[in-house]
Image (cartoon, rainbow, N blue to C red; front, side, top):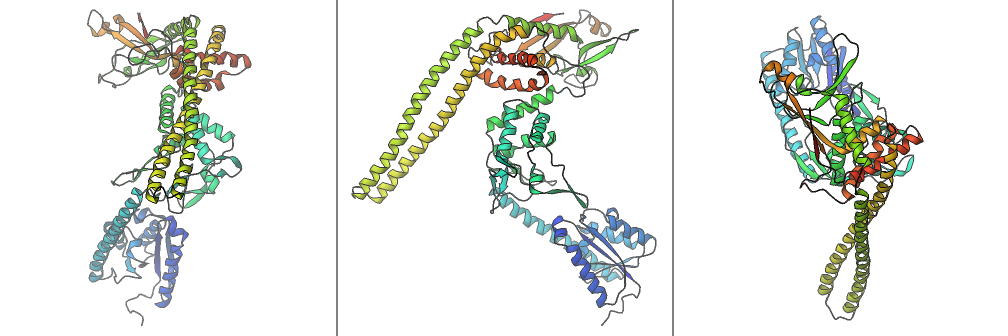
Length: 600
């Protein structure tokens, strides 16, 4: 029997789904199908459909694409009755639902649910509506709470809960992450794990920028995970294919992600306050390599020229002794002249920043004067290295002795591992002869396996240390040879990139200490004040003892050569000139003074 309260005029039906999963299951079509059958049953003509497909219930009705159209039609008097599948289609909370209904009722529109017993056309229906809206919100919040608790339990176990799997990993059938060591399609000799490790190696050891790494990966035509999976990103209601290229931002995000050193924090990206869960993941690189990469990113960000139109040799190295901010280069045009004078000025002179809480009054430093001063000091040391070569030779002999001792220990370990296999055979023989029990055999085998594992771990560690020692010795030989070569090359007006790299590795920082004038007057402060420059070099350790070995400095600085190579190696001559940077390894272990003081 047809309800006599139903009108004879046409109705409008509003449908909505929010998640992408719902779109793929076509639940919007399910609502349309249900609405069609419902209207056929009650012989109701359908005037129009309003479908918000893939629109969140958090968005107010009037801000949804078809929800806005529904409001406009209601304002124009075209809508008398709106049918909905259930009240959850109007919003997620009781307030959202009631606001949506109130907005429609302002224009005389009635709302009726096709699955719930309420009708806003009478007082009892409106009262029931408020109850149903509250129940809907309670049901949703309870469901979310249970989902969150379940997700937290799974997260503590280390499972990967939705979201894009990080590059270099894959999710197994039990939802745990594993290192992706399968060959990349089209690159049979390369894996995603290998790409990740290559990226960290270029950043940590070779000091490459994210721009250079991205360009390098694109030149190798390494596919991104989106291209590999044929994945798409969602833009509004549509889907668009990604560009499929590596970008500096993508490299930076990967390099700073702690998951690649084996640590993931679940819940950090949530917009709501929730428990943060730290869990261990398979590590792609060691903590040491990850930390080196972060240091490179910080250095590159600090040393980046940005939009500078001039080359500044000491960019990022000069600090103000008064306010603690960095000096930066700028040019001033003199009165009545077109030529600009270039200075290094404190960043605190242009804004109320730093420790002083007011504009800094430190003195400006002429660019040419300070750069010539520092460069001459660097040249002086390069041309007169003193007994550095003798120190390198002595240090090389020490490393060779260490290598010999390690080689002897390695042979001893290998022999001990072979003996463990013989011990296992002896234990089995004793058991067969019933001279020991099964329990004794199991206990002895377990102890033997633990001992063998310890020996194998030490052997692996020793192999790595021997490789490092051989590398250090080779770099010492190169540094000694190239030190002599650079003495000839560096005097032939080296390119700016080469000079910049040398200064960057030699100079730790420069502190500008502005001394107050004798007459403590505001007018005379900047004119009569004097400046003490403290140039600190990188060659003293924290205890103030000058190192004699070259190992640490070589390991830290030799990879930096590649950073300047691409820019300065425009010809074979320039490239040969650049090779002299290898001597920085020996310079950084020199007895060069920690500071010199220049008073202006």
